[in-house]
Amino acid sequence: MQTLLLIIHYFACILLILLILLQSGKGSAAGIFGASGADNIFASPTAFNAVNKLTAGLAVLLFITSILLTVSYNNKASSSVLDKVNLPAPTAPVTPGK
Image (cartoon, rainbow, N blue to C red; front, side):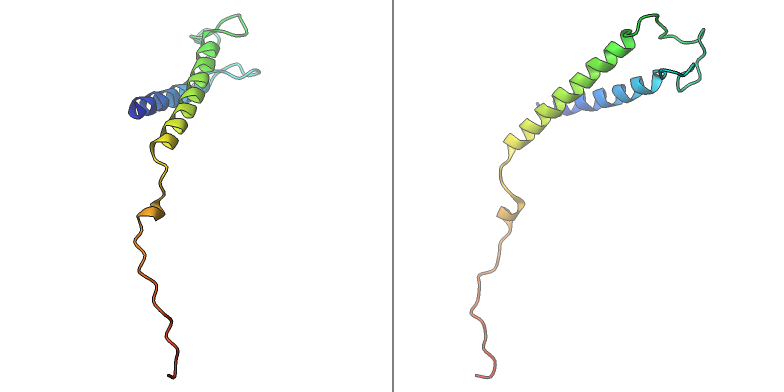
């Protein structure tokens, strides 16, 4: 289960980064790859187009997988690394000169 969540989380991260880089800014005429108005594949007259909806959906998926991974890893093990360390038995201090 954790492996599947981790894979989905990685894909959501990568796709979210790519979608954000492909979007053009508010005042810019071109995106990161220099697409002009005629070459822009994702151009739409609406303010909230399909790419923005996909970006928002991937962001929500990223938040959900982050929370689920945190909960699943915290429930998995509640022991500490220090519980496995074997400490030597304490010895009586040696007094010098006697």
